[in-house]
Image (tube, rainbow, N blue to C red; front, side, top):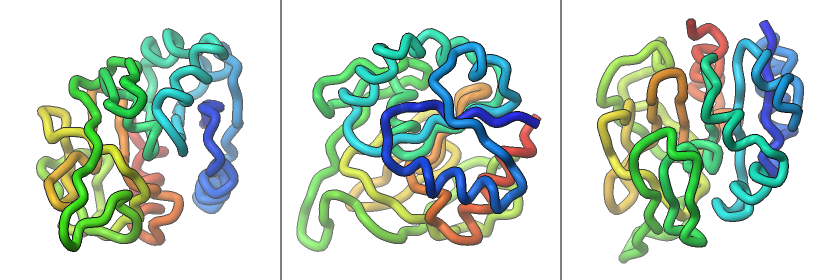
Length: 197
């Protein structure tokens, strides 16, 4: 099996690659459209701002390539966010694969933004991506913008208000948290992605 990690301009590539190596995968970090199209699995990581990530992908000529992928694709953190239609962050038009607009999280008493640290998720519908996970697994989050709960939501998280923690639209999946930093549950989710048909 071949696994391509798209060069989305993020800085967390080392930890993602290490987590995948522990699962026996040998990912290739690439900005080459042909390599991405030919891979059995594609990972879209991301750390930073939506505007910068989309600008980077446009400069590399990868936006249409990503939209047309037919194999399983997993977006992580910002990589999940840019699968949506739009982000309020920098008023950014994103890839438009998943319906919805990312909104800035609201701070309030006891609710800090960015949402940073461990939190549980609640599964809303079953999916092979979630196989073997407990009902309310813990994952590690770092983000200030969040996706609304919609038809593609597989799991939600509560931080002031509920938001989409895991989404799936056809062959495109996304995790708002960092599975590569989420111990056993994160490893399980990544393993499930590697095994998806």
